[in-house]
Length: 150
Length: 131
Image 1 (cartoon, rainbow over the protein chains, first blue to last red):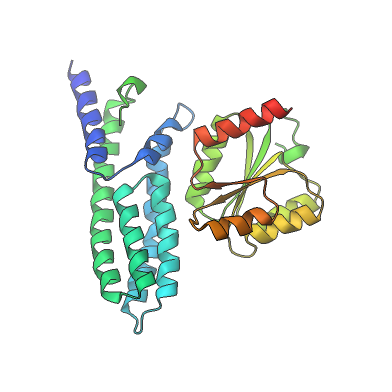
Image 2: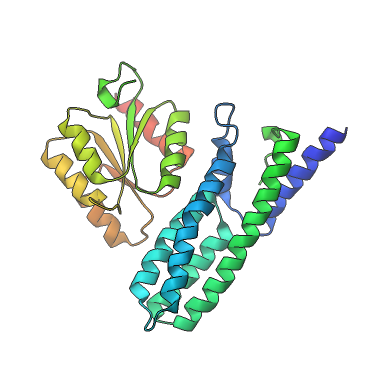
């Protein structure tokens, strides 16, 4: 009984990530690639994302410190970052990337800086929530696919 | 273990060409799950090196933007070499002009990243019907 309750808690936690607009369908696509041969596939991909994107975050931070701003370079960095965020289904982070790029195209430095501050917060929040989710999921074991509603 | 068409496997052989390690991992897992034999390289030059060494693949999933040699240049070179493999462009670029330029380099078709099971499933169905 307790195990079923734990599974429900994990499923609820997972669903809340979608309901809060943090994740999209791409995350479900990753889950569909997880199987006995790759039991931690989703966590591995997310870990890879946070590892690789750390360099991009640093590059963008440094580029935003320069004067005058090189909007073309900023846009290029953010294009890469957006691509990676899309790959893991990080919906909110992705939309902030889009907004940032719009500010780049408009040459709006302040818009870029404000958006990036928010993006970094949401990026960190998502990381924490996913870490907690993966930890719980590992403890209770695989959830049946029947429970995988989005 | 073989590489591309030198492999003894009867599976469809696919090559993922992308410098993004996340995309490499996702696309390799996806194509493997669909039953393909998959290899990965990080840029267009590595694809050309493989083909010049005599290796070939049934399907190539070619990223547009890569360092050293991008997808457009690599595709043009492959077609100039007479390579008949199916080359599917994969890009995160939104603009039609950019996709059109990529298509004009010699692609069979172009997908938006990331690939999904349904996109590739449809492609494989078409290939089976064609054969």
